[in-house]
Image (cartoon, rainbow, N blue to C red; front, side, top):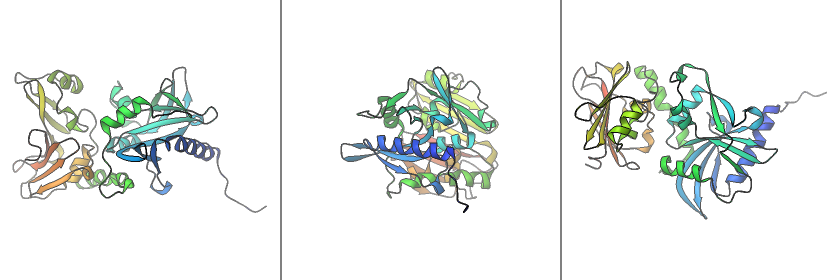
Length: 318
């Protein structure tokens, strides 16, 4: 008998799950499959449609067949590699994990970023995999008329605008910034509370203190310290209006020494492709985040200092 390639059971499950999910979501989204050779942990990039018109709001999906997951009483557990989770956190658009029950045409979803923030074990980065919990209650069927409300809410809160060059797959190359940081500076993606530090802008002092697990000083400012970083959350009134984070391992730097600001932003899980580089000097690179209306400065403040990144809404556009 002639030898031929054989399709595995896992491939069959994955293909069926992806086809069914794509069919259902195509009613509400422009569903863009990620080619297998470019699949680093995302199966689909979706753009939300309003009637027949695109909105520019994007989100990602990683699809799993129910047969690949562990089903419990109130949840489904899916093991995900830590490298894949870090890749999801790097994305400018929210990434959803969706488990597909092809037999019953049911879908169960989770927003892993929220799950990771809720973990009591803060050392998950040291593991090989993390078991992501997908609540049974987060369920929708094949005949839905609209996208689930909670998914829409998360997309509206987190999604980026469509890339200016129209290359939806451009978001998949952002790992380059992380790679450069590791190669050039020996830095890796920072975890909470240093992950995407712009999130603290606009928070009340009390909320920010709770999130970063640190006490405000008499001025209302909050300082968070680790071996890798020093972060200042500066208050004005009752709200955080400026964030500065120093990357300790880059010290000592010189104001005359060039640096790769895109790599530094990647360490903080910030996508440089979302930003406009407004000015570039040897010691200070100024970016504008037009989506969040932020001014971002990557700089060496003085000779011997570490590289630092500052975030401000007050001086956006200035």
